[in-house]
Image (cartoon, rainbow, N blue to C red; front, side, top):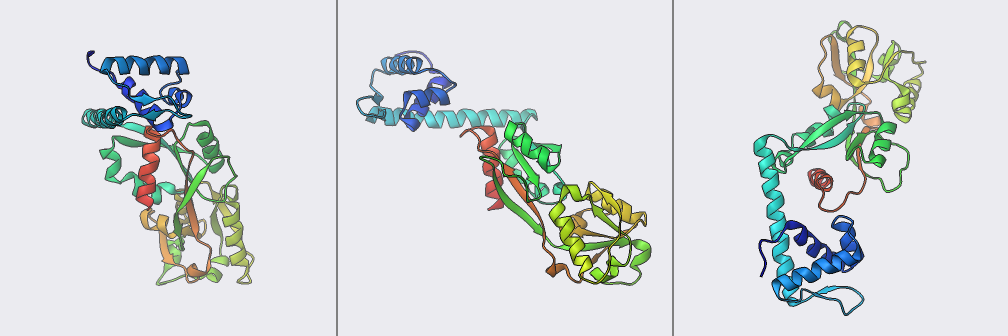
Length: 300
């Protein structure tokens, strides 16, 4: 019998049980070699006085004693991680998860996820990075971001996973002086006046689709102003520089004095403004993987 056992030994035993391979177990347990894994497992078995692993087959398998040991080791590791999370929560120092946002995601699905109490309970906190889609994709590939919220379509990236998290209809934003007693606005009404639009480079397919819808009314739309963020679009409308189409999910949560939001008569006929959540696969058991799992659970 030895003294207290360290958690690295628990992790190594669990890794070997999960992988059945000395090399893979060593890689998961911190990049140690097969010889070191063999020596540490042998030391563990001497310490306990029982064989935990059967090495006679093509893969390493647990013995009955090993089944009992690894089961308790898993519980010990889970308790240790929970203790760390609780301590960080009490100390007010949650683990930060780097999240990229673009084109109004802060006013839509990201807000719903960030307000999920499960994040605080898990000792996680979002660290927001305002990045355009191309920059988010690069940061995800480099590991600088764990999650990204951006509008499709976007460039194909090896191993990238994503899920559509919001699809919003469109509302009209008009200068307060032009609102009068209107209850709704049509595309034809808007197309006859100067327009404020999100910069085409940020969402070219959406931009071109809306321009096509305006032209379908028989008008030749005039884009008088463009902006790189939806708050700027609404601010320009409030200044009387033009009218705009804005995703309804953003229009409901972003109020700008001088800009009036009205229902769009043809809202159901236009392709929705969609937002996707993207991520790269993360090591099992990592905090990044835990954050992704929470988002998937929230999204259903």
